[in-house]
Length: 195
Image 1 (cartoon, rainbow, N blue to C red):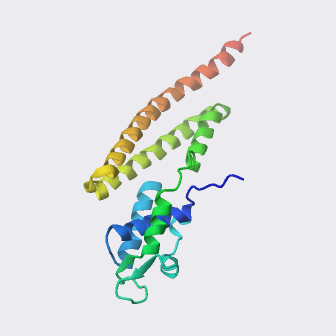
Image 2: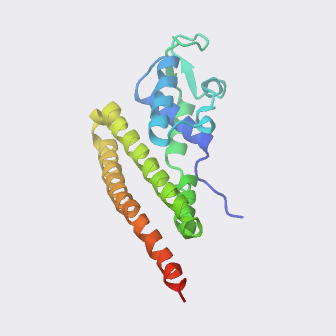
Image 3: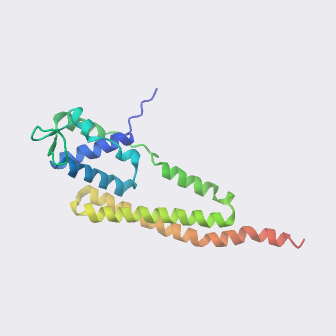
């Protein structure tokens, strides 16, 4: 049977934690905050993603305290050789082409929008627009917080912002056409009524 070698949500958090520590030795509290901030800025708040424990990384020998102490908020951390191997394994994992559940839900909303009553169509169009505006705001916040690093991350972020702005403009136009679509769909009924 085919083995799925894409990352689970838990592995995604592990990758972020290991990469953050490998990038610069920091304290437990600093790493936890950076991981939380980074993931939240990309995906929005998610208990599924943020429930992973860094203590487990230490138990597994992937990170350690630089001074040999036990973990607390002020403990300085470093990545171990085993941690670097795990980081490389996670970084080189396959990408799942449609792993984002919200993309599937969005597609279904568009696919079945015509089945809703007219007033609900407008509400759903606005909901989709609001979601995209929230996504753009998260990306802009990410650029403010981390855009000064430059390199591939900044290039990717700028690309994502451009794509999201284009999608937002498309959705705004789509929302503007919803009332017209409702009027058009109602027209045959009103035309048929006198007959």
